[in-house]
Image (cartoon, rainbow, N blue to C red):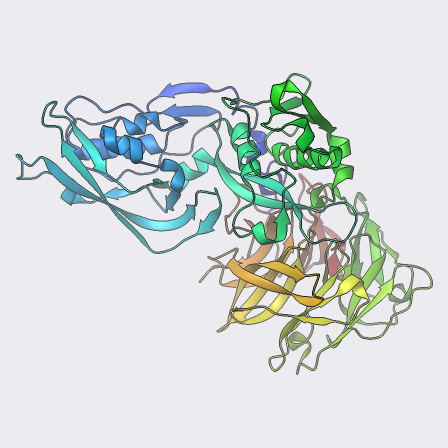
Length: 607
């Protein structure tokens, strides 16, 4: 019943395959190409060893339209870097104008070729139209951003027979590529690229992850560098900045970038030394180092070179972690929870025992009944919601700390209709929602001390039931209830720092579209969350999901009865913790769930 988290979704499956992607076994052909016989659906290729590269076969002589279509679709799922084999199934004009990089459409199964692609009785026809169909799962756009999709996929593809050679080729087709889900999982990997939160207060920049999908066996490292240089995704763009000057690109002809035997990577850019200050160069190198460590975990340093081979700057892993605030490198010191004596207690994150000690200050005395708590990222302050869910107060984690005045008050009819568990971001701002059906709203308390401001949430599809803000302070996860169903939504936080107006949460998008009842969630990485929920007609389950709605490939935590709350850190070395029917339990790496405190409630890590 326990789950071995080593190598699981939190550690991202592509890390384990990062090295085999650089040196691989080549196989000719991913499927046989029939010269005759009945047409069939082009089903997704079974999952294969991630270190094996697959190349398709070119069209056979005198292949009929159906066979051309099958060969073309199979070529789309190969590891051919520029789709050169796939282009052999197209006419010369179509090969020049087709843009496979425009999008990737992911179907539940491989695309079906409908039967009107057969020539049938029209043996003298010189052209034919085929229809591809299937059930959509997702799309990846030209920025490599993933988005869940639903509905029927149906596209026409036209073939013609060359009057001189008699060979059939595709002459009209939609841009982009299409493939089944298992082929997509084999061919693509999700990688976080990094930018900096814009509009933050003075101090070290805050790193923000922007997940994209790249072809895992097609020079992935060079792809990712180009993706970082091209800028953030459209959704994240309004709230982040890049330190690379506009127009920055790799030098002409650069490809196959990889660390040397000293785990050092040199990146040649089209920049002159005069265009880059030392501080900006450090930030640029930080963006690349954070990004590329996803693909090469042992990468130790990055050197940026300008035109003429001039060294712009270099950056080690240690310096990068001090150059920017990065959630997954900030290991929390303690786990916190409320014990059976109503005290807020804590235990070291690296502890293997079950002993805890009460925190200093008002909340460690046990004379306050608490519904939920949140500890600031620097572990100096704690926000507490009382047992009735009616008031939010903040105190310091010092011996003389005392509870201040209520910052937010709810008048909801029951505790479940009052305040949610609060949440802190790296700026020190505190977030909470009021679930009162008559006065629902999302609130932010700047630095945990200012007057609470109501946050606007345009197009909110229901009532907020739970809130978790990302460490970076530019993304927020909301559980939203509508018509008895609870969905997980990710929103972008936009701040108008110069006008003094309250922030707003915009462009909500689903992060777990197939779950209709989300009962608990927590951030569990720079761009991922751990969610407890149910599919329609299903049972409660735990699952890792990304902010873009993709379900991470890999094992989920083991089953746990009656989960009411979960806690995780962006640092995946820290054990998962849950409040369940067994009280407070934890899941260290490589082990099963362990009981910590049968009477404990409300577990949290800082955040």
